[in-house]
Amino acid sequence: MSETAKNVIVFFTDQQRWDSSAIFGNPLDLTPNFDTAAMAGTHLYNCFTNQPVCGPARSMMQTGLYPTTTGCYRNNIPLPKDSATLGSLFRKSGFKTGYVGKWHLGTQDPVPEPERGGYEYWLASNMLEYTSDAYDTTLYDNDGKAQKLPGYRVDALTDAAIRYIDGVKDDRFFLFLSFLEPHHQNHLDNYPGRVGDEQRYAGRWMPPDLQALGGSAAQHLPGYFGMIKRLDDAFGRIQDALLTLGISEETTILYTSDHGSHFKTRNAEYKRSCHDACVRIPGALIGGPFTGGGRVTNLVSTIDIAPTLLDAAGLDIPDNFEGNSLLPVVNRTSTDWPEDVFIQISEDHVGRAVRTKRWKYGVRAPNADGWNDLGADQYEEEYLYDLHADPYELTNLIGMDAFADVSTELRAKLVKQTKSVENRTVDIVKAPEISAGQRSSSVWAGWHGHR
Image (cartoon, rainbow, N blue to C red; front, side, top):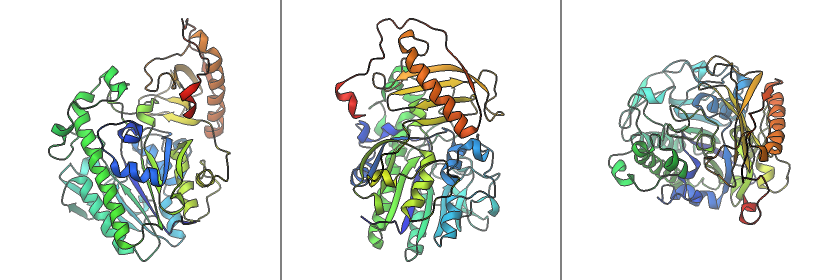
């Protein structure tokens, strides 16, 4: 195990649910490369996004700041040009820096140089879903010139990334490889896998929440699963390239996503919901100091990514970062870690939630607009889920008398988190009380203890 990583790569997918992996029981063998790497490296078992929307999630990845801090609380708000990003911080420390794929933090395509987050090498599109299709990939280079890449889109971006790695293999480098898959193709509202994927995965398996709630899953899951399989193949190709170039052990790779997908079961589209279908994401760190790190069950979220990557490379973490480096947890030198994740919702509505290992508690602002309002002063209780008894969040317990103490505790947590992150003191209106019947909030014993 290396003490620090010489190189760092982010392998970033778009809209990938955590339960697409066999590690979480998916039986389709979609992610053998991810599964193997997670077991050999450090598996982030409880990994979450703090904001399940493309632009806000990406702003956190780049800056280590919550979207309400940067102002990028919804899509179509560009990252402030003076932001200290992963690209600029690694570059100032002498790393070659490259960005390949989807950006979604600029104002236009091609993205003007001042809006590129300080990355030195650029082959990207601000809105990749609009400048390309599954077999028609167009990105823009450093000069703003369109570059059409051959092959299925996942393969085209992977080819470009490997060419970049080969060119900087003798230097220290930081590469952010950002895919569109398994995001839907906006203008068609479908999930275009490679030719033959929809037939290969049709009708084979469906997560329990989608079985119960339906949505668009029957139509879209086959292509979605095909996309994920191709992404995993690409992840394997990146690892193969590092092995071939002799830099595998000294290179840390993070695999994660911006958010998941609920397939039109929680609102009229795919995300913008606090449910785990949207906020729980795959997470693994391999290579460098993360080799043999095992399964980390701490609640890790997107806000922790930037400080972790800088720390892994031996670089200073800016004082204003709002997350924490995972390295002390991985190295077993610290047990001091937050016990909950703070989640912000925009666009569909203004919402906030807190997620612990057992509970999910969420509120909604009745008098705020999800597109125009960054936050709110008053919220109403919307849901409470017991994730031990109901991991796919099918039974809402909010207002039930037997869970009043749980709601009181989580309400206080959420008020505290909102004050800490947003510097806003909020009022939360309790849900009307109803009878819980035979349901109880007693702590379960036995196998639930491992979560």
